[in-house]
Structures are given as structure tokens and as C-alpha cells.
Image (cartoon, rainbow, N blue to C red):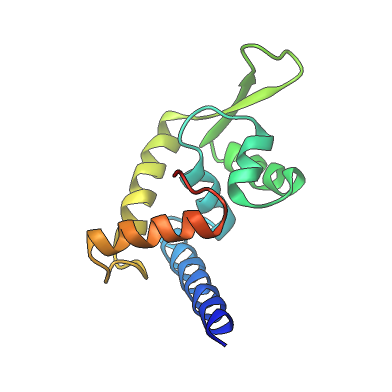
Length: 135
């Protein structure tokens, strides 16, 4: 019973976080997936890397990136070491919009009611649960 309740709470938190991202994204004329892509694009990366961070298939990430590229927020450049690959880079407007987005996402988020110490503890527990335990 406790595991089921815990899974339910994690699922509820995930939905709340998704709703939070979508609501904040809308204020910047972005979709939820576009906001997720911008949030995750914290440096040059391939489409495959971005898709993994977004938790989606590369074809879905491509659709999102295409729309962001048309808006002038992301550009594709040749990969420096793999001539078959392309790297995604934020443009100057994309970097500015990402900074605004990240700031908005931290305001009134579902985990904002937790203290810094509680957030750190939650992070450690979640990393352990998903198999990214650093110990």
C-alpha cells in the first residue's frame, strides 16, 4: 500500500510540474514541449541528446526544434567532431528567452513550498529511485 501511495504522489507531482511548465510557457508564447526543449538546452547538444533529456523520441524533438528554429531561437550547426551530426545551439534571442523561462519556472513551482534542505533531500531520493544515485 505504501508503495502505491508513493507512486500516486510522484505521479501527482509530475502532473503538477507539467501543468506549471505549460502555464509558464504560455506566457512566453511557447508550448510545453518547446519550453522543455529550451530549458534542457543548456549548451550545445545533438538532437538525440536533447530528446533523451526531454524524455521523448528524436522525431518528436525534431518537430519541436523545427518550430523553435523557425522562430529564430535555436540553430543547427555542424558537429565539431562528427561530420554526420548536427549540434543544436541557442541563438541570442533563444538564450534570452531561455533565461526568462528558467526564471519563470522557479516562481511558484510545486516544490517551492519545500525548504532548500527539503528540496536537496527530495532530489537525492529521486535520483536514487531512478537509478542515478551518486553514492
